[in-house]
Length: 169
Image 1 (cartoon, rainbow, N blue to C red):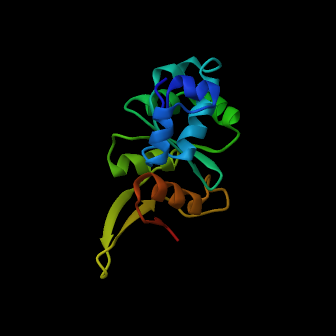
Image 2: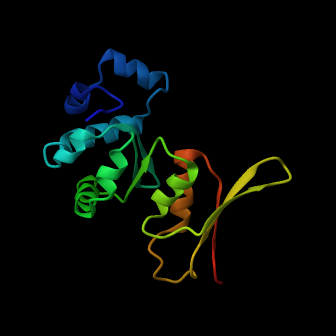
């Protein structure tokens, strides 16, 4: 598995001078280091992780967000039992996105298993923009995700201000 830090550093928990410099210069974050350490310990239990690349690991509101290199998202997300095992081992809710996709694909990955009808960009008078996502159906108590957490994850991963609406009120 390729990580933001050296594999030796991830296994020992002590950063080498090169990785320490990356951390101090903000090329990597403390959460990148923490997630790398956790994932390096899981490679033996979950061999599929060895074939992936972690670009960034984030902690957003108590949840773990993995920004994976090309193809890593598919290997982890499409195998539901593997995803659940990884989520149980990390002891957090898990969000996995691919680093090399469009904003719409990132939104679809984050909203999974909920479908997205449309994604629109709304330009505000002050020059900023807001991305509006329309989800089919109506919001019920059984809706499978916390919408505020979805907004926080999207903001952390792509810097997108999100407005979520439902097709029916």
